[in-house]
Length: 397
Image (tube, rainbow, N blue to C red):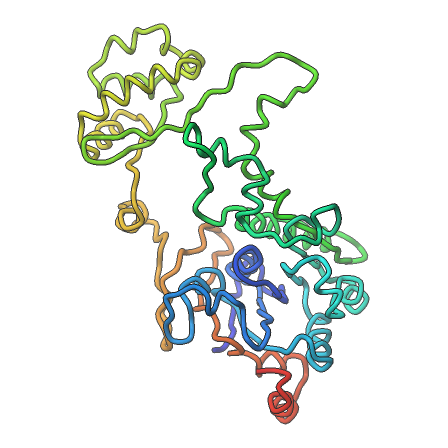
């Protein structure tokens, strides 16, 4: 597959060496690829484990892998061989960014740690995503999303009175990946502004990134440790059953609350001093929710949502996945699209950012394992004969 990024893409000309697997790192590098960066996915000869551990499988790709690896090129290398290491050192000298999500000592043991690579390429922005960062008592421990969710303190709040509950998605991994994207773009901007044009190392611990993403509301009551001022916490996250489904929403502004009262035909609620203003509504959210539970349960979801939207009250149905795909706004915005490719059509979530002056290029399907090995090695100056020899020796695939 020819690699030809759109000239207008905002990260055109940025080359990324991607050593990541599964979710946190691949999400990070996929976003950079969406922005037009040339992302070279470096895989061992067996490939990223998500190629084979989570289906469905079709035409050499897995469904899970396909959602985190579009717009990339793949080279398969025996990273434990000296010849494989030399190839990586050559490539690192021509890249702007390197991203890895191994345990903190793995790249050093492979002879490709930050100190080695930055000596070869002082402009390199080296981003390391790990469970707990490069130091501290947990640094050497393996960490998956479940572990980080358990540590951060959100699970009891998420479960409410029903006991601790996990988010049933790898939200900590994704928080780390998106944090790494922001840090990498910041480091690239700093490099451009720096007269020495120097790169730097970035460490993104999943624990820190997830805490920063999910805990600001829980931190609110603890914002002023030297003061007793504050108000008791209140729970704004309610799901309301309807006659045939569920809805979610809340009224913040007074106009929204007035619209809600009109839809329900409850003039008495409009005048109730417990709910007349935003502050009072929050303080009496339990009482208001009990009333809404009773009122909403008597109405159908579609009719109720239509009336509430017309009245300016922000509520929405609780969609399942199929209903999300069929949603009018989702279809209008093209949130989900199909990558048309002669080898395999792939349905993906489209890049969510919309840039007016430097629009993103049309997505390319995820790569097959080692699909671009030859063109990437040619980029590093290897002849066809040299590449054939490397294949014969089992250094690349």
